[in-house]
Length: 454
Ligand code: 2M8
Image (cartoon, rainbow, N blue to C red; front, side, top):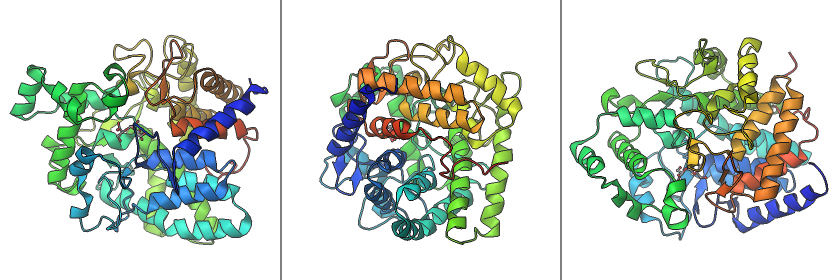
């Protein structure tokens, strides 16, 4: 790998990002995802920072156009002039006084990567611009992290609760879908599911117009997620108002592990600006790593998300189990996880890393978050392996990831068995993270997302 071929890979990846560019920001895919998505824009900024730091800074500024007055950063900002009535009607953000007036947004969030992306972008900017950029985004980042703890960690436990699978980013991941299936459903939904009428939802869906239904969320999962969002809307998407019996409230593993990394980045940004994180927020930051450890399950040697109300662990293994490696965890956690990553029948098939272990009953090689390999997860795991000193394994995964995209293209996701590409063909975060991995030859570069030397 890392040969001359990769020069052409970098060029193709930049072309994808150029085609998906919409002025100041970049959509995940022109046809399938024409709007702005939170964590997509963060990954995009990280990759673009490698060759055009001012554009990457604009990407994050564009993301913050959607920030609500209460600090929430929404998972989507709708693009002007794109016909997507179904999705906009679901949210109707302007009915909420905290939502911005000049853009329409969703009313939920997504993995909290803005501080991580800001750290990457800042590293790439020239000195004078860096300070201006950080001074711009710092108050917004603080407001977002404050919102996460104030509105989503109601009992002050150190873990943020998510109210919808779309917030976790791994939308149809089995633990969330199993929990969703177990929820009491309204009579009409039970009827629709029983009579297999959920297919009707397909007429409202954008994705199946562009991609075969077999590669996308099933109609039943789609209907359940839609109904859950409509229920949350009755409570204005406010966790403190949501009744436990008709809500799905989960302390999500990947989200909270990424929050640890993001808090670390925000602390570093504050230091660079000579700012102080206020003691209340700093206490929240300090609580999260220990709380994350409560998600560890000793008998299986893995991490899992858990139900916020009952404390029950959602014990289906997914790729999320590896995200805490990046958060920095004890060696007793690292050893079993690294072993798991090495086993062909679990997480090391021909084209790693599958989003669900290949030997799990839920595994489906071609369907969305139920098994395929996603480049953003590989990127996170590469960083995690470096974080815990597994340099050779990190390099190997980085190389395999680059080879996969080199051979197949910048697809949205890939079969871990055949390497075939699925979903959107020109997917922005695949392109951006490939560029970052190609530039990642100096892993000791101090972005601020790794803890200071211990
Ligand atoms: C997918 O999610 C959206 C809903 O937010 C969708 O299915 O339409 C997920 O893969 C999510 O993680 C991603 O941010 C989004 C855009 O790429 O697509």
